[in-house]
Length: 251
Image (cartoon, rainbow, N blue to C red; front, side, top):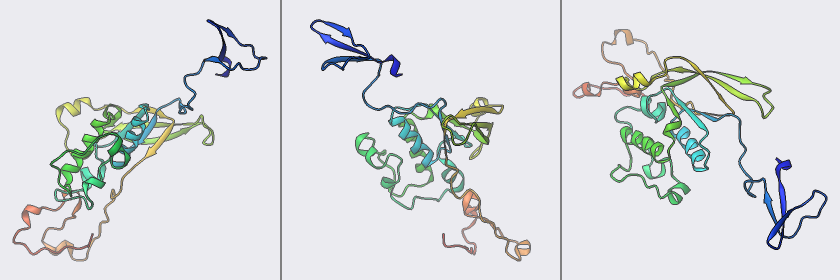
């Protein structure tokens, strides 16, 4: 507030408050401001992040590193990692790039934070190691207290004029559980009723591969064998040895 800024002119061992009509003295003490460095804009509500996969975790880390912990993250799953690696990936899924250029704090963070990825991980990590990596990053940067797992953002309302800075988003959040069965402790900690949370800024990372392309081929009804998709651990790999298997798709 400019009205709260006071200039104190240094005069020997004492100081004197300058008047508004006076020229600013060469040596003054400024009171009423926190810093001469431009500060971050302070929103009335927290920043919301929908999805706690790679991009959601990375965005939360960027806010935490800047000193802004006024964030709230939502995910329908009961662990961090996102749909792609928790549900869509199967037990044989692996990274198609090296873990060294995939992990969340890759880039300048790797140098400035002295946060190397744990030793013993494979170069082309599988599903379980990738999920461990997401958990490690969330713990390392302290974002877990801001993450609402088992929470589905079911509805969004824009409150106020969309073109005004004062507008915000009213989120309707309902209980959800995806990815795996719940333990008794997790089930007890789940929110039982829908709740409303206001956020001033919103990032949305719904993930990819969330809708499988299902194709019905003529003759499936009389085929007699097993028909499965490679995603979501739908394929019974333990039953494949000794069988004639047809693979459709080069993905």
